Image (cartoon, rainbow over all chains, first blue to last red; front, side):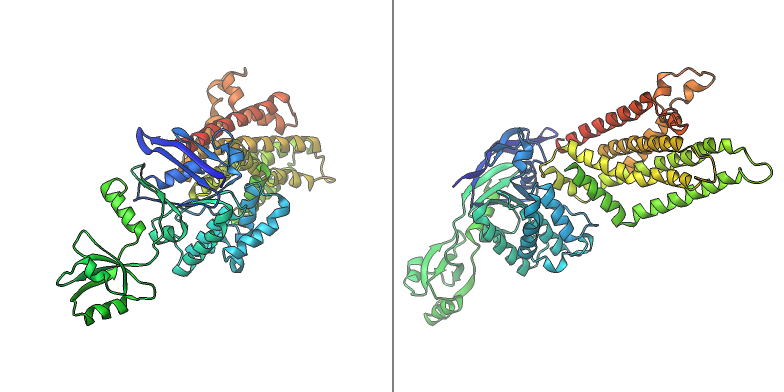
Length: 304
Length: 244
């Protein structure tokens, strides 16, 4: 896979304080990376640097083999960016604005109509294409923001909180849309929505105070895990013999982490436990791998 | 890209009531000034028709210069301030164009917007053609002077808007700078007629020659140089804004 984004020793200082420190990563075509971290971790600064809106104190950013600060105009042609607040002109109509963005991104005039119709359809904006941007709801504004980042089919898409303001249905549609675009480009998403990151991304970068806490592949959860607490407690190997349970492992707080066998539900497991006379005290969904990874990284200051 | 930004600015001004309101208000004021001026040329104590062109330059085109002084900084600070307010500066920052192109687009947009306003006194003057000895050449020279003046006022407004994201603060700053450029020669002209460098800095000295129908290279150069200076300062400031 060809490298789209190459970030080396990227640092940014402001008022003598390091906002971002020696960030290194690569993104290839087809890869989707999630950028996670608590508020003030440096996620938005990182995206602004990658978008060429801010200048780094040191380090290099290469987009499609072009240095962003040596040849900014050439590098930015391959870039689509949705900032934290969608950059909209309130007095413009949706279609008029997207056409303007396509022209601003240097899309050839002959391709603009086709690109506009495609992005209006993909982002579900056909119904509101004649509406003024200032009159749209927050969800629609966010969709227009995503549309302007995708209209020129860039090689690199940077999205800062893309599902902010979207209802669950719209958020699912956005995830599907990004999934469709993912094979043709590299996508970097900063978000607080761990479910979004888990659903879309195959890599994750966790930041805190501008430093990289964790960077690597995101292993998808094959089956949903459950947290099980029995009274009196039993040994994990006793439970492993049950046909409803595929894997079981002890947790730090004395409870057990249980992965169900294919076709088994939590209700079926609880019935089996009660039939065997085991005292069921707690049966709840276990946080996902990403959730565990995130909280462990943030609390310990390093990756597990 | 420059033309694209300028066109958006033109559309933005006339998609909202602002552009139309300013144009309508300017039309009413200038028509009233013309009618008042023509009053002096009728009746028993009428001025000689030869004084008409001087009166037109002083009253009609002079009033337009004052209107430009009020309107152009307002439009300039509003247009650049809105980019920060609406977050669209980020869109521009991540687009394949330089800050110089962005600024040039805004300047061109403002200069386009000023054309109808600068042409208003010329159109009003033309209504007298056939019934009064109107000097068309002098009117055209005065219109060119007004247009150059609007370029200078736009440049000062954009420079002020580049200094702060607060539209009110940048507007006060722009008016302050322009008023200073209007009265800077006051110190030396009291009792002295020689042209000092402070006289040269004052825009009204240079506009005066255009208003009396004299298009001089030195005056044209003054407007272009000073506008260029303020635009260069604004470009530097914008560059620093993206690299604080």
